[in-house]
Amino acid sequence: MSYETPIDRAIREAAERGAFDNLPGAGKPLNLRNTSDPDWWLKDLMARESISGSEVLPPAIALRREADGFPDSLADLPTEDAVRAVLVDFNARVEADWRRPGFGRGDPVVARRVDVEALVEQWRDLRDGRTGSDRPPANG
Image (cartoon, rainbow, N blue to C red):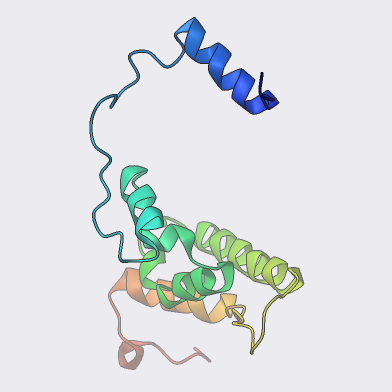
């Protein structure tokens, strides 16, 4: 009698119980298209799980992309307090990213805090439909 590993025994016992009977996809060929691409399995997983590429960006790059959307992404916020809350939260997430340990070679990608007051002013202009040249003087 040959030695049976614990894993082999668990598989054999599960098969004897019928745990592998009527599994979805049983008897169908595996879908192995694009196997010449080394990341085919990851791309297939992302498509199967409906994961977009922006959901898997490194945090600093995702933060930079989010900052690029300011102030336009704030246009639907109803109040100045809501705009400030979003921007303060953004800056807190940037600072948390700064504290995350780096790894690998090369220069790290760094996200920068945003100027809350300047973006609140831009939000006001956006809300009021003004451009920078239409803005009243800052001194009043």
